[in-house]
Image 1 (tube, chains in turn red, green):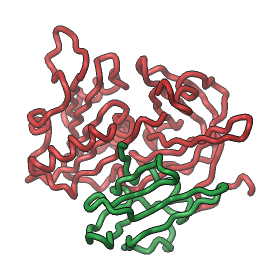
Image 2 (tube, rainbow over the protein chains, first blue to last red):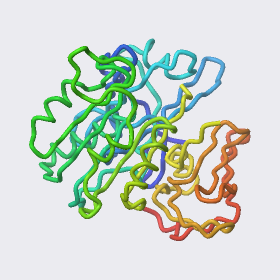
Image 3 (cartoon, rainbow over the protein chains, first blue to last red):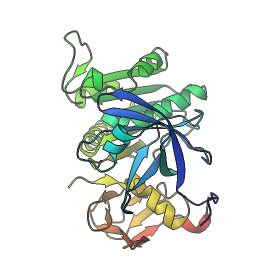
Length: 248
Length: 87
């Protein structure tokens, strides 16, 4: 096998780590340079493969955090203490190191530029990652579709991309709400506790507007949000979901 | 065990079919439910990966990797667009 990337083929290719950005105490962004990168759509993911000295390989999927318009590919990974891959990516990787990646992967949980209806994004924890790509892309492409983001995190310090999201929230057509599940500041006026039916009905668009809904997070979070929104009359065929597990 | 969804096997399916597959529709032969491959319930920690119909729970796809050889076996699951069509 040569190194050439064949069209229509998914090949492993090396990416060079350009920078590591600590986002929160539990999440790190890996900025990568990939010379042969074919480009991606907002919402897609990549597979990352690590090979140990003895040949043992471990593979994981990570959502892409950067917009297609960004110069580098960015992955944001959480550190799962007992994981095989994440502790290495989040803790031991250094600029100049190489990672093996293949992608982009995914044609379902992706932002579509033809969307005209309002969009609701519901994120639990690291589920914010594909939405960061979507929001950056929407901004770069000067999209005018109205977007609401509901982002559930453990605490304010666990809110990934906080400053960037705050800047985005300043735009009229972008509405961002945080739900803090474990800790919140004394002066917190936002939602505290897990997302619930009332909060979801507050943030969701009227079903009459035929909104698009994207939900991403750990499996139980996604199940709860999706079933609650469907029970509230959001058309199930307009709700797209992506679940991730504890495998680190 | 917590299930993931078909997004998690997008890379493997791409490897096998030579194209993006998660947005492809398929019909469950057990209950008739039509769903995107991304919507299947995926259990990735079994020996091999198993995908079940989100509606009736029957196994509709088994992915195995034996000595680096990846194989997908659909069980009573009919793909509703042509995976050979490329692109």
